[in-house]
Length: 256
Image 1 (cartoon, helix red, strand yellow):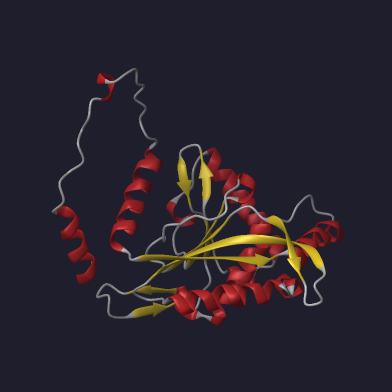
Image 2 (cartoon, helix red, strand yellow):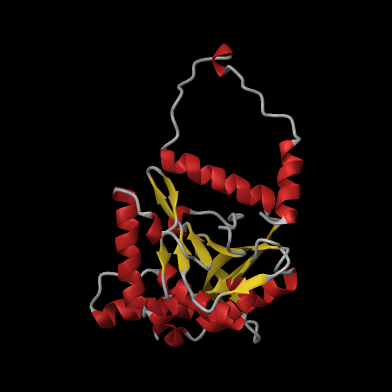
């Protein structure tokens, strides 16, 4: 544990404990036990939230061309699907190569960062037993179809019987996509020892005024980038998502 993390942990240790209240005094209740995975995952999330100075940068990117390209891939390759998050993963890899500080971890002293030369992207998956984060290893060397197949298999296994630890270790950056469930923005919690996480919510069509004052409809994807402020500054986050938007305007490069 770094000195800064230990000091913060000591600070929270000095706070008064939460009250243990008998809620049945006020009305009917039902006591349910948290699933094991959710309990331990919650402990980790609480630690990360309490010990990492989070900042979240919210933005929207135009995915009109990206969505058209995704649909064309499905038709051309005769596949039943190519999910949007898979293309987002490939765009993330491109951004991490341009901004390597986002693909790093603080060392145990809190004085150095370990910049990773690999691109292992975690994908948060909601399961009946809690949140699990399978990791797509070497995402830079796999095409969108390989990533789509691997993610589908890992997500199915996670929801069915859980995942072994080796399938959730070694991540360098995490994507948390809540897809069509809705929402405009949220604050994803950093998956330590990573230093950043990207959240994506439901895409929506928005009227956009062009330079000639013509109004056109464009599909926008809301993004929420949480980052460790000890390593990353606000300007870095803004540049990261700006570059992300540039990358997805050329979706054909994501096929490699």
